[in-house]
Image (cartoon, rainbow, N blue to C red; front, side, top):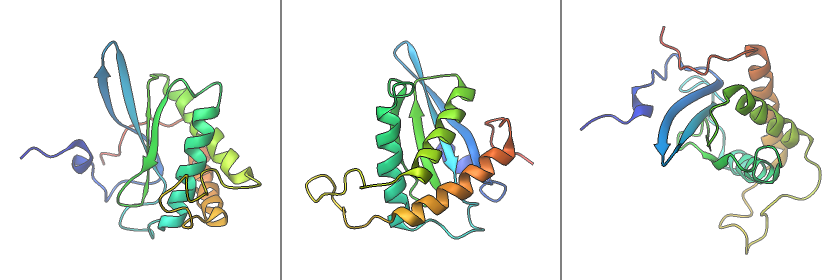
Length: 158
């Protein structure tokens, strides 16, 4: 059986960053899947479920409500390996998408108040949220992205 794209990436060389995972034609548009790699696979501890769940709630809500980004964002959700997230967009302007990710990280870090979707009727696991741990992960990831400067968006090959 043919390997899916994500299993062809060398996870030993993979470090925190923002990568283009794939581009898929959908009608007349192209949907780009970004790999938001927050932790180094198989090196650093993975994020716990509450952190990931919180980041998912906040990032998805902020992205889908931002006037600048909402029309391009199709999906934001966690990776099963708990080392990052996928962001699916209909935009080929990678620099703008990079800025969108940094903007949403800042919004999560600065988030004050109630959690989005934190009611029983809104979420199937509404008690499993941890805002402070999510903010910590976002701070570390934002620092990593800012240290990169201008990303290539390509997975490491060497």
